[in-house]
Image 1 (cartoon, one colour):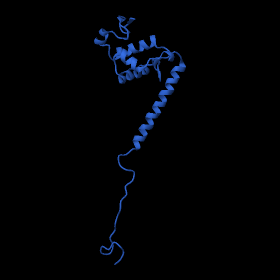
Image 2: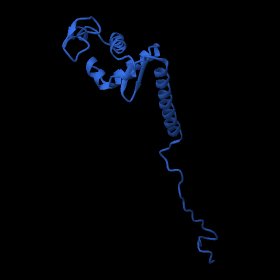
Image 3: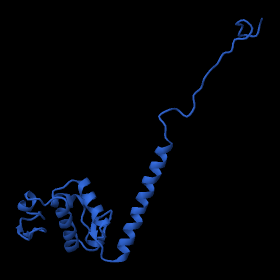
Image 4: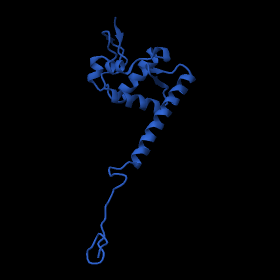
Length: 145
């Protein structure tokens, strides 16, 4: 089965979304970001058609961190890119967007709680036991003078 490059439209062998020419000639950064958005909109609209992040990484020849950055940037630009345990997808309705926003709010809360915990964390022990001996009347510590 052949498919078309999401950037230039050239025919591709199965399993690829970006042709070698686009890959070599600056289909990086914003262009690859746009290609991911187009691909999700055309092939993965709606929660039922979600694609796992590993598959997107393979199709667009990027690592997980870069994929998450591109997805985050698309969301910041106002594109309704949603995600859940089944993968990424282009929203088909407002409920899908709301569910993703709710899930992201939970992640923000967890990060905030971790930050707060670190703010109060210390590499020093919470308490230190110190033993003090006071010598009185010429050095007799036992009280017998």
